[in-house]
Length: 129
Image (cartoon, rainbow, N blue to C red; front, side):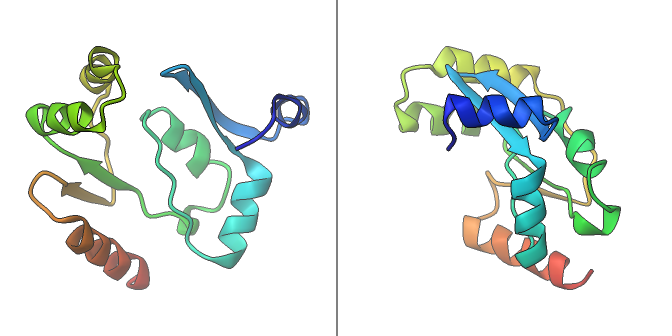
């Protein structure tokens, strides 16, 4: 979370690696925060737009990343969106329809794999690097 002034400062300094506006909110990834996270651990970034991936991958050495494609079928996604009760089902499903699959190091269908099992697979992949 950041204030408008902080976001404007990051923009002016060229520190924003990716920015997107959706669902009435602005989402961004800034270089300084990500560098700090990378110095301590393997951060997890949820990037809802495939175009964000090369922007992030290009900002740091390639061995810093494991790209994981977490996906589910449209019916599963719609059930989850409805259950969240955010009141914007149509907008979220339109975004789902517009999002293309990505090429990743690891792909997991979250409609078939429990969250804990997916986390274990990802953890094993990270540790195996």
